[in-house]
Amino acid sequence: MTQTRPPIVVCTKTHDLPNGRVSFLGAAQTVTPAMSLVELDGITLLVDCGAEPGRDNTPTELPDDAYEADAVLLTHGHLDHVGGISALLASGFNAPIYGTSATLAIARIVLGDSIRLRGGRHRDVRAFLGGFDHMARAMKYDEPFSPIASRDLQVTFREAGHILGSASVEIVSPGSRILFSGDLGRPKSPILRDYNTTWDDSKPFDLVVMESTYGDRVHEDGPDQVRENLFEIIERARADGGHILVPAFAIGRTQAIIYHLDNLVESGRLENLPVAVDTPMGLRVTETYSVFNKLFDEEALDKLSREDDPLDFKGLYAVRKGRDSRRLRDMKQTMLIIAGSGMCTGGRIVEHLVELLPYSETNVLFVGYQAHGTPGRAIIGAAERAKDGPSETVKLGGANVPVRAKVDVLHGLSAHADRKELAAWLDAIPGVQKVALHHGDVDAQNSFQKWYK
Image (cartoon, rainbow, N blue to C red; front, side, top):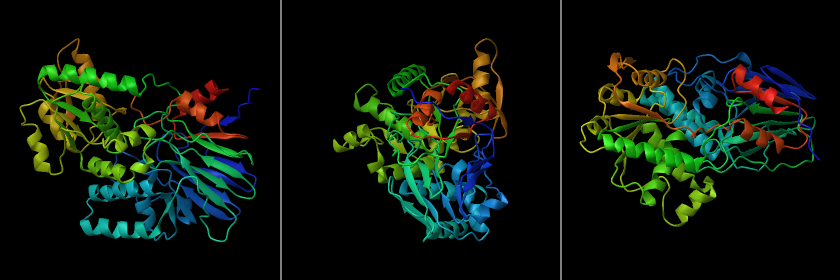
């Protein structure tokens, strides 16, 4: 018997519950920043407290309601889900902040880096992290807990498969049951376990809040095809004799690329190619992944059991100092350089591009979405138009840089589920009364609503 699909509400900020309501303080009609207020029987919970990614300054003020929360529940450690916490703490906020151990560890890295980018000194970072650690509460997957002592309300973190430690948040009170998807990953993604699809049916879900980043599309390539495409691109680039530059996000994308490269190296298909991880944050996050490797999927755990670290291989080098980063460009042998930021808005990748984009033997490989208005998007556009005309320039590091390098885009590495994968997650949940989409632009939300019926 086919289950009737629940009604879906799009682009709506407030959703009533039998004993309260959920309000989107962010990401109601956009992808970022994620921040939702849950009010139940006089208890107020903040699910995520994000800031806009791609900006170096955390917002100085949050919506007024955010400061009144009795506790914060974090789905994962990306900036658009945790970046507002520094403003929260600066206001004198003194309530528990819950997340999985891996989420809290990654959040520390992200928030500390954000303070440094805003010009904060070492003592500023240390003071903030001290306050954060004082309020942080690490919780395990699938073990209910009470975020407010002596109150009849339970929260459970469930695997979301987006980045290490990512979680969906289930909230159960006497009057209602709510589920926040958090950001949902793609099933069978490298390293990570698949999102949870096992739910008890003892009580219906009054509201499911689901992300809709890619509610309007289907990802065509799976992990095996991604790896094959990566190998072919590398082999073509090596024939040109120049460096291969990979702008990559520090969290998730850098580790996925390393994992695919490890597979190619360990299988003997990829030999004698030095790979430099030239992103300080990416290195710290990769180390965090290794600390919490018990959260890896079965394939990655099997590699570890055979003493094959899936995030390390012969020829992989960590570049920590700026002067060593600059030396990479002087290497005569072709090498692959993974550097931040993913959209070329800052970080070490900018210096590499400024110097190497003008050379035809250089290859640039984009492994993530490039938003309109970003240098990464401009580079792709300039390279595409140069196929039928003269080379163009892009603005990078304050200079107009000619784009003569070859540019490839590797699809299929998205950390977000597509519409079919979102539907599969949603269809596994029993007794859903209503679905509210957020964390997606208007077109994506409307598209999913129309398609899902």
